[in-house]
Amino acid sequence: MSSILHRFGTLAFTMAFAVFFILVSINLSAQHDDHGNQNSSENWQDEIMEEEFQAGEMIIEHITDAYEWHIMTIGHTHVSVPLPIMLYDEGKFHFFMSSVFHHHDSHNGYYISHHDMNAGKLVRKNSDGEEVRPDLDFSFTKNVLAIFISMFILIFVFTSVAKAYKRREGKAPKGLQSFLEPIIIFVRDDIAKASIGEKRYKKYLPFLLTIFFFILLNNLMGIVPFFPGGANVTGNIGVTGVLALFTFIITTFSGNKNYWLHIVNAPGVPWWLKMPIPLMPVVELMGVFTKPFVLMVRLFANISAGHIIILGFISLIFIFGEIAAGAGYGVAVISVGFSIFMDILEVLVAFIQAYVFTLLSALYFGMATEEAH
Amino acid sequence: MSLINPGFGLVIWMTLAFGVLLWVLAKFAWPAITSALEEREKSIEEALLSAEKAKEAMEKLKVGNEELIREAKDERDTILREARALKEKMINEAKEKAQVSADKIVESARERIESEKKAALVEIKNTIATYSIDIAEKILREELKDKKKQTEYAVKLLNETSLN
Image 1 (cartoon, rainbow over the protein chains, first blue to last red):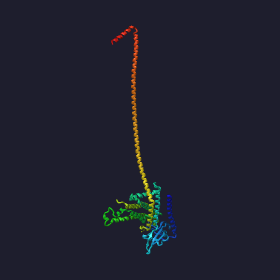
Image 2 (image 1 turned 135 degrees about the vertical axis):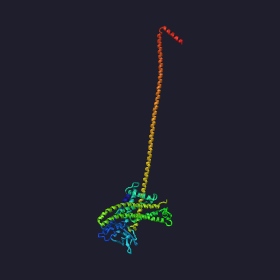
Image 3 (image 1 turned 90 degrees about the vertical axis):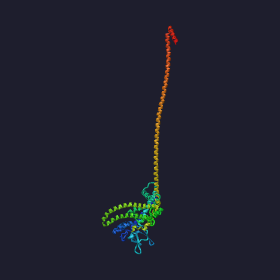
Image 4 (image 1 turned 45 degrees about the vertical axis):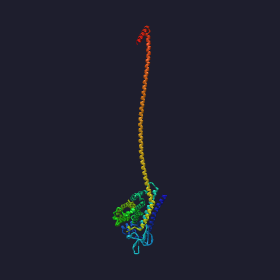
């Protein structure tokens, strides 16, 4: 029975990917524009062909979210996964595919901005002619798709591993199970048990395991330069913010009397730091919010920085290539070498950041549930 | 700048996706995995403990065996020693007995020889006496063939008797 389920799961998974590729190919045929690219497209690849190469723009476009998942450009043909755009603006819902922007600059007055705060985001002109964001933009963007892909991968992997544990009860782990088991044990013993304590760690273990593997998988997928990798999920401040928010909510709701007492009236601190001016309580209260904030920024900055460095090295090739083709090839050797080095470093960083985020979350849970001595 | 400007839609989708992921994994994956791990660890620990116990028991058994062997050896030695002593004692006793009986035999032989000797001597004496009397008779008969000599002798004998 389980093997049938397993096979069904694999089939569903393959089908999901097949659907993506069908979408890609439909999109490919739809936008093969042989009558020349009149519209100045949003894609930086065109800018390489027609304008000067802008390294900064290219890097920012690669590490920020996008309304479609651009895979590659062959000549004038864009291979990309079109994604649904969902807007709620001025009391109306708007729903259309991102592929409309391949042929038209704007759709119902909405277009992708190139300026300032809104660069890369969908905007419209208001009555004063200023660019404004729609009231609510819950488009299914590139990062959302990447999040869903990793969500399905994680669900598929860990439910099958759980099945393997049930099927091979009491036996030595095998295959994927034996690959993941040391990591699961590491998270349990060295993160959860060590930070929260033997008695209370069990309640937090599912969350810690989930964030660890979610961050790790997305960090690693971010390094893979082609679909379905390459989306900068954990290098997106929104994503890390949500993760940190989860940690913050769990910490706050698990906080016991002792935890709040520490914030309001920290023991072992001279009274004059608390009494007329509540200096310590204010600092402690700020700490409650800075902790998740730092979690958010650390992961976002580390992952984005890694991507920026790699993209910087790659940009060097094009910058030198514009000066002289030979220089481009020459620099390519060095740049690719450095990029490989950075990629390897990024793999390390992927593990370290997943570890750090999980460890700090566990420490905060530990602090919140610590009993008075 | 868009890099540090979290998208509203992304935050909503992320919350939704992560929430679903957390719920699914916490319900269908983690409990099964962690409980299986714990159970296995427990069973391994138990197996190790029982192995330790078995080892201890073996050790004890070994010590017991050695004790048993030593005791058996000791017993064998004592038995051998006793047997040897018994053998010697038996031999000695036999020897003594043999000596005693030999002595007895010798003694009785000696006694018999003595008595035989005595009897023989008596017989010899008797025989000699008889012979002597015979001889004396014959001598006397020879000597007393004539009357004169008979009378002379009788007188002599009478004289001797009267002298006493």
